[in-house]
Length: 174
Image 1 (tube, rainbow, N blue to C red):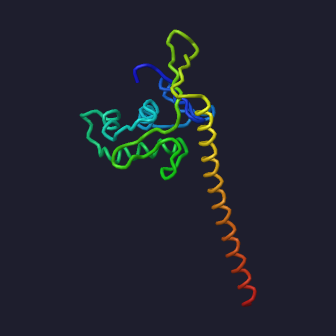
Image 2 (cartoon, rainbow, N blue to C red):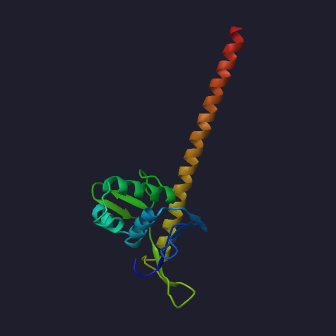
Image 3 (tube, helix red, strand yellow):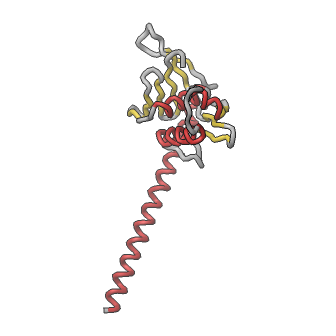
């Protein structure tokens, strides 16, 4: 990123100057490489970013790392920070054996160095589209949380049933 930007998508703000990801006003911790990867993806929203593009952006030619595992780990950390599941992507779509695509609508705010307020420049084709997408993304994330809660509740109920069955069997066998 040559100039500082703020990328807004869903309930997130990605501030390239402050190097922060903010969710609903709270800072989400993200290591430098995953942060840089998220900036790269959000900055090219809707476009396929190849694994080779990611390698060039995150590691220089002098660095010797297991690049495949490095990219996978960075993507995993970004997804965890965004609270998404790779099997049901809300923000980052995997294009098998090629790369990744940031699928959420992104508003790009160029931070004017002389002004104290950001200069707003929408990068999407309409605020209604972005608003609808934001609500859909929030609904998907809420549904995942509900499913997780249901699974926990079912596990607790099953455990309680087993304990009750064991207690009944113990009492009957005495």
